[in-house]
Image (cartoon, rainbow, N blue to C red; front, side, top):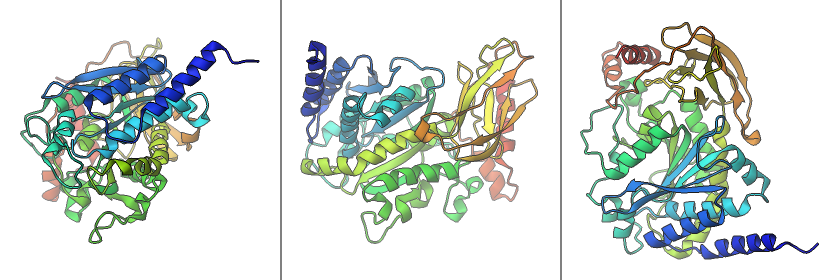
Amino acid sequence: AAPSRQDVAAALCLVSLAAALDFRYHHGAELEAFLRRVHGAYPALTHLHSLGRSVQGRDLWVLVLGKYPTHHKIGIPEFKYVANMHGDETVGREMLLHLIDFLVTSYGSDPVVTRLLNNTRIHIMPSMNPDGFEATKVPDCYYSLGRYNGNGEDLNRNFPDAFELNNVTVQPETRAVMEWISRETFVLSANLHGGALVASYAFDNGNAATGSSQGYSRAPDDDVFVHLAKTYSYNHASMHKGAGCDSRQTFPGGITNGFSWYQLEGGMQDYNYVWGQCLEITLELSCCKYPPEDQLEKFWRDNRAALLEYMKQVHLGVKGQVLDGSGRPIAQAIVEAVGRSHVCPYRTNEHGEYFLLLLPGTYVINATVPGFQSQLKTVEIPDNTANFSALRQDFTFRAVSVRTGAAPCPTSPLYGELGRSAAAGRAAPLGVLAATVLLALTVT
């Protein structure tokens, strides 16, 4: 049978969309036009919105992709990629535009992409610092003024820090991302940079409580972070070789603990993990911060498989809901794996949902509703990333008939007191501090 008019139109739309995105740098108006064109061609698969405006008034665009792009769907994890927070680090910006193009044009024909989008809500922010990008006019491999936002601030030193009081004036771009993180139930994220070739993971900052005196700042989910970083580096064409960009500095396996590389306060990676309940790694994609355009196609070939495989990791571990005896969701319940408590306890969202990224193995999951006895359940977690769904484990508190009202963790140096205790030889387990924070929050 001859193809229908609708089939022909759809095919032409797909071809024209792909042909429109060539391998060159896309400035503000071109980036916006591309995102609008994608959304116009795939309105049921995408949602385009701005998080706000930069210092100089440019939109902070985000394109959401998935079967349910406009809203959160219970059981569907939220994932994000953010690029170009340093305006002169440009490869990530273009990689995310090509990733968008690849996802929408492959949906329905590529089974992996189709299952990924059917079971994941993916948020893509090509540029967190559009002012900095526009200030960097000529491709340049090294440091430039475009690194900073319109106020001359480094956005990756501008977030609240979990280890020390950094006393920064939060910038509009930072504030927009912080509010975005608080609205969504992000589970996994990556932040795309340039100037090196490595996957870096939390913590970027540290103190005695996280082992920084040994040159490594260990997060409670260190094993998961190492896995996530290796997932990207070993699916990248060359990152896993660990050669880096300078013969004086190598990265075994193409990964590094952030603190081991260099100490950084006020970074977005640690903020996501401590306050956003979201595991984020930093991906350094190019030795040259702003390479010539004729190299972009190779960068895409080098990164495409890694970008795709990393997104699938959002389906690691266990997820579920915490419900009362009537089946209503309980928000702000604490759900964590025994032995890896967080200094800011991980809580359920308004739907009573939790998502815990955990490697395959046996775990005891502890669910706590303030004022009621905890529930412990032992789970055997398989590797379900290929099935695009984490293990599901719900909890029901039959005696609970009230909504909890715990406040979020304060954006203060939560690891500060713990670090001072550890330095004095009185190290307390993270669970003790987490319980202290929880108690303080439930009585205020």
